Length: 391
Image (cartoon, rainbow, N blue to C red; front, top):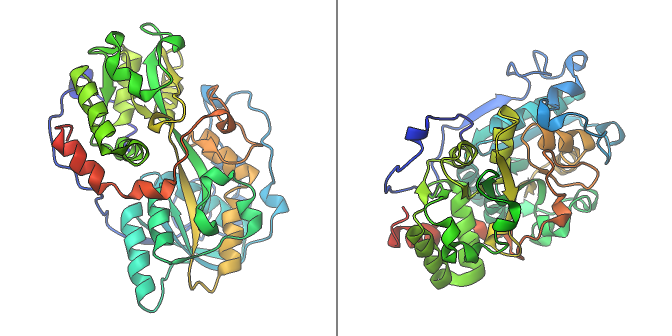
């Protein structure tokens, strides 16, 4: 996931390309706290160095925020013992910051972290579970699809009820297998000098038919978040309607970018009038350029309104089930949820913590009814996108 801008000349026309469903990064083991991230001591257990401000965001989007609600870590069970955590996805560096903070609060807690792509770690857990058992106690992934793959393989055990009940049912896995810890909403970022919110339809399927969106839209079809969005459309509406939508947007003259941060920057620059992106990319633009003419519109009850989640699940066969459950509980504390809101700019999962940037609360969004675990089945989506020439 790129956080860096680029010259507008680099944002256009990247051409047709083949895309792998997942690219495994080099696997890394490390003790939480052994990095030089803020809020950690030399071994991750120097509580004198623990400072809550180290996991709170700053800047114009988070000024004058109310004190977060929910349950503080101070009121949760102490954590002690050795926990092996598999951490998957592009936000791993930011999540490590939170993991180090939690590790630093508890002198008797030791966390071993293994990092890789979510898809690669999901496959690792499944293969390990076929043998003598997985070495992981807890899997933390930035996408529900990877959590679902592991759960479907029978490699998870149910989360405790005190964890599950903190999160709306829509953002929990079947059979209590996983729980969301942070949400990412699909949106239509638009340039406020070119459009008003009322100009943006509340159905994703209206966009190919409206002349006002001719040659002014942008997307990033090679990007994982966009492919999850198309996968949701395929699952919800079938391949025929999804293919027709993709062809319709092509006829509209949609401009291609390498990632959704570039889409959002192009909207803010006026290079395009609107685009498709997860909500936090526009927030990152706004945090760097508070006066940028960019805002977000949300569709209703379709793939364009998809809310995907990062989440956690306990791995079958762990001998640290109670510790893993209590660690997952800490990820839903007021401090952790404020971290997800103000640092990663995601949607908090608990009602006591509000999103930043004037976003509507997650309970006011109207996402489609979909099993988020099905988003892992991306191969038919890639095949369909190649057939219509989007990839």
